[in-house]
Amino acid sequence: MICSAINILLVACQPQESRIGNNHVKIPSYQSNGVFASARLRGPLQLKQECLYIDDILIIFPEGYAEWDAKNQTLTYKDKKIALGEELDLAGGFGRFERDSQRIKNLSPLCDHTTIWIAG
Image (cartoon, rainbow, N blue to C red; front, side, top):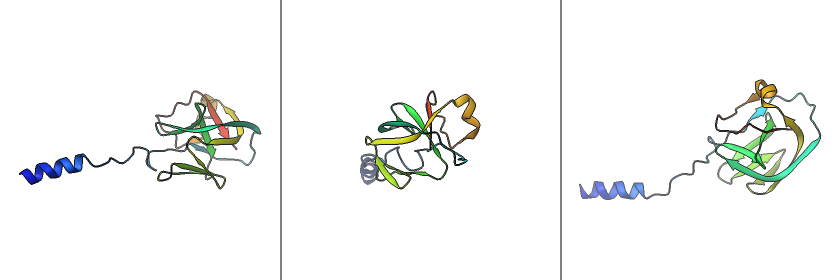
């Protein structure tokens, strides 16, 4: 009985895995037609809930171009690794969720999509 109680306490006191795991960071994407807008968005990479932002602007990546590494907390985009807090420089343009939502895949319901950036 005492051993069971000690065992429960030991398990409860173990460091818990961060909620920011590979399956908890969703990278919204869209099917690219190869034509991209050429405006620039620069700023520190932010993670809020399950979503990646620059200055509270939700980033939508072209499908197959972006990958999240949960262990190292880095985004790989076009073969470049960017850690949280580092500056991310993206070509693309602002989107309107109402117009573009049909194109967007893998969007978490936790993402604030008030302002979106269609990366290119």
